[in-house]
Image 1 (cartoon, helix red, strand yellow):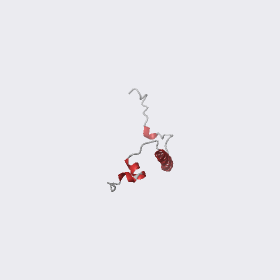
Image 2: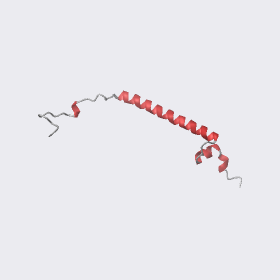
Image 3: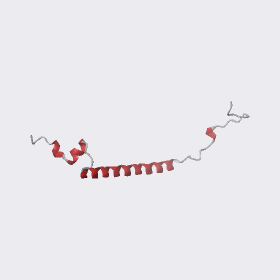
Image 4: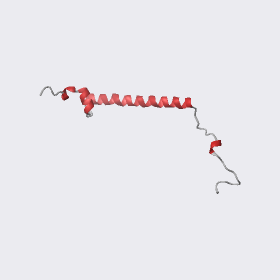
Length: 77
């Protein structure tokens, strides 16, 4: 049609992209991203624990149970 000029047709499958990576390169990248994510999550959890200990943020039910289990003790009624 308009894009094909003088019978010239290009097929994408014949061309390799310069961004192609090997399986090993992908797995190394994935391990690095997973490590960065887990480090970020660990830092956020540590900061949350620190904020809870200082009273800067309110606790959810699970955190309240872990830090102050006596609140849920019904034996003193």
